[in-house]
Figure 1 (cartoon, one colour):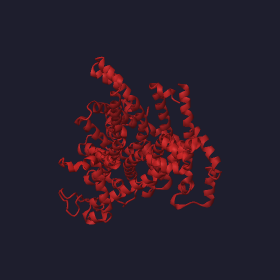
Figure 2 (cartoon, helix red, strand yellow):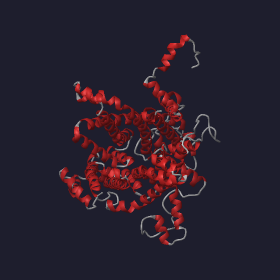
Figure 3 (cartoon, chains in turn blue, cyan):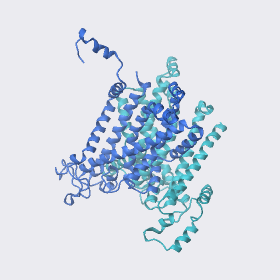
Figure 4 (cartoon, one colour):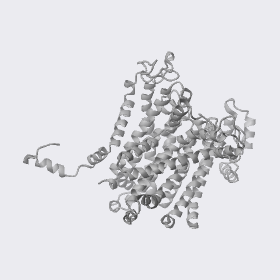
Amino acid sequence: MNTPHTPSSAPDELAVLAPPSPMAELWRDFCRNKGAVFGLALVSTYLLLALFAGFVAPHSPIEQFRDAVLTPPAWEDGGSVKFLLGTDAVGRDMLSRLIFGSRLSLAIGLISVTLSLSLGVVLGLAAAFYGRKVDTAIMRLMDMLLALPSLLLAVAVIAILGPGLANAMYAIAIVRLPAFVRLTRATAIAELQKDYVIASRIAGAGTLRLMFITVLPNCLAPLIVQATLGFSTAILDAAALGFLGLGAQPPTPEWGSMLAGALEFIQRAWWVVSLPGIAILLAVLAFNLMGDGLRDALDPKLKR
Amino acid sequence: MISFILRRLGVLIPTFLGITVLVFALIHLIPGDPVEAMSGERGMEPARYAALMTEFGLDRPLPVQYIDYVFKAAKGDLGNSIVTQEPVLREFLDRFPATFELSLCAMLFAVCLGIPAGVIAALKRNTPIDYGVMGVSLTGYSMPIFWWALLLILFFSVHLGWTPVSGRLAIEFDPARVTGLMLIDSILSGEEGAFLSAVSHLILPTIALGTIPLATLARMTRSAMLEVLGEDYVRAARARGLSPLRVVVRHALRNALIPVITVIGLQVGTLLAGAILTETIFSWPGIGKWMVEAIHRRDYPVVQGGILLSATLVIVVNLLVDVLYGVINPRIRHAR
């Protein structure tokens, strides 16, 4: 702001001297990180595409144009403006499938992160509040889940539930559960030592009130970061399951399952192989950048 | 030291038993039962069904079946594959060297590139070099490795024609299986060109599988180095007039590597998970591909055994890393 310094602007100056609100400060710190802003911009773009997929996409994601199989992108020889990014092996429009894919990937991220976050918070708080036995039981269970390599655990869950998009989401939620439980427990235990919790306890607050109203809001910062990063792993794992044929089933336009048969076309149609991967990479990268930026902005140790 | 190891083991045994429960439950949670799965789409006569249930002991109470399962597993009997009728443990051991060879190469690739990259990024903090290394490693970290593998094939195999697309060895070679590691067996066989063929088959899967550990290690090494470079003993070493290289390697890097070693240990799980994808793409005959095929064929004893053995592997490696960590860093050993 280039407001000239006149006596009448004194109240403004006072306002400048007052500490900014926590949200404004978070936003300022977040914006200092260019990568994070880039990530946020990308995530917003995906979000808009996902919300308005029906309006933006030129075709239906599952309509097969049998006379235009494996059309190259518009700028290549033989390409057509009708299919800007070309078509796949059964003549479906790549661009439309990618746009609808963003809807699926964001939904997978949202649902699986919400599931594992909410269950993780409840279990983590229970471990922190309900004494040694509950704590040991919950943490042993989490150790078990951690001993299984992420994708392997997801594959095991799919083996029980059967392949499919919904089951892939449950599988991913279970895989990510230990991270949220451990994080909630660790931050809650650190908070439990503090005076305000003791004060609240003396004032007669019940355990549930202490857990969810007194302590939980103060554990949110690391959980928000973990949730953001959880989006990226959820999208990645869902794509991997789709690729293996264990997640979304055809003709669902899920990015990973779009790549499932792509090896076949690797010599003839580069766009079938490369475009869905770019969509996945950018989405995962965006959430990782945003998560890193949020962590730096929320972590007081890194603040000057 | 021994009490430290025993304490660790004390925590691991319940974890391990828990996993056996989980894996045991796997087969009973699956809709239908193994006999139904065996009978396939056509179904089976009730008498034959009952006979098979008795034969597999599936008509007994669950706790009895579980205890039976644990004792058999402890003796190495993980049942037979429904598809091949081979013992699951033998099938696993047959395929394990392929996965081990690939994982080891991927880890070496990650360590040899990731640690120097992290060190350089830390030393050149906030310069374009640092941003470049961190940008590349974040991209690697976000990479869907099955797609990365496809890109590598597209460029190196299809476009340049440098490397083969799948398998462990060109078809004309058939070295005797001695160690199960193709790099060693191909040398021992004495066949000309066999070793080179093994190497060329290994390159792309190694890069594909090693990329995520590489990115993780670079990021970890950078932050560990930055922390150590601010320590008093590094300043003291500098003040004593030691050469910058000596300060970095002998004083800073040695201490920065302590947390990095833990991360290397934790990557075993990442490697096993990544092997599922990498092996599927490159038709690498290891346990990852084996398990994916087993799931598609509904070969549940294989899925069950594979999960149990992989988890055991992860647990054992984590124990080793913990112990190693205790050896390097006495403060951990004596902490309660």
